[in-house]
Image (cartoon, rainbow, N blue to C red; front, side, top):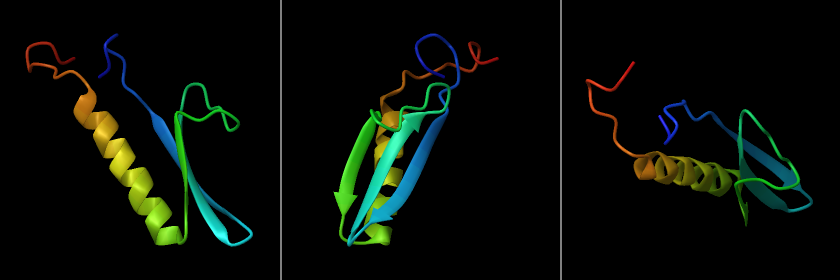
Length: 72
């Protein structure tokens, strides 16, 4: 849950152009391919996937904790 008690849905996209791999993360409710929440470029597909997963995990850790009695 985020600050407004709504679930946060993120989409990670991994793609390749020429010899470089890219990763970006968008909000699922308002995807912005030209202006993602986060992006990066990598030498391999595995590195791009790992970076996207790490970034999503960091976003999850920054969310405020929801107590059991507040959860729906």
